[in-house]
Length: 321
Figure (cartoon, rainbow, N blue to C red):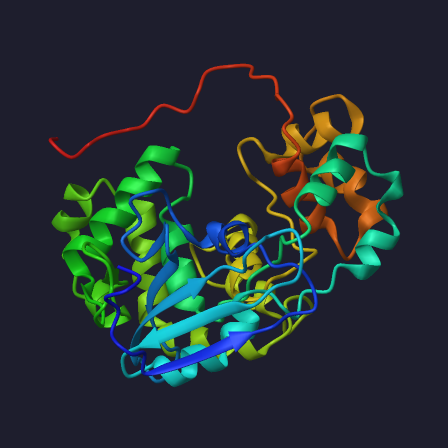
């Protein structure tokens, strides 16, 4: 694949002054190994999407630096009508505006395992895609369902309602569906795709307000007029969905997802040795206000073996009813 790629329509060679772990940074955008829109492959990370506002399709290949541990060149190649815009946004996509220096200065109080995770993953950045509607679609499909249901729902949506990505996208990769395509999905098809009624209703609300939602990318995350407040004013979009969205669209370093099935327990065990609830999680994270999502990401990389109690969430499959 490396030698057979056509010349890109636009490209850039980034030379950041900090390490960038491309696969780890962009990994939060990939919904499972079979995600049709984002793939980590031997030659780099491939992404297929449309430029917000313009709607121009693009296929992007991000080739990692030689090492994720030290600064090095990162090459971004793009094909399709949206190539120039995608290359122009590569800096934010890779989280190169994500400044960890203030966090690192106050990291000494973190547990040893979390500090070790930071040392072992200095190239972790928080990506900012700016693509509000795409991210909302993926996150809404993860509301109150199992991991397998969420991944299956996204694959079904893209494979049945997405469109071909500009060449040379790898085989099986597609563009996410447009808002227009989502608005046109009949109710029985949502049912066949293992998407629950509450999710499909929220998906349709997002699709109906797509133009206004895309404009939120220019707003700050928090505050009365911020993105989180605007998103949670939409029926079917709660605090968890808003947080999971802005973590990826804005690279929000402080926005923590409350209402998650496991997160509060994991943060509690990592920071205090005991499980806790959302309120307890926020109290534990308060010393790192401004960087709480950074702490959460590092806890996930620290190798903790978290305890499991109670029944697992069982998937409800009504497709044949």
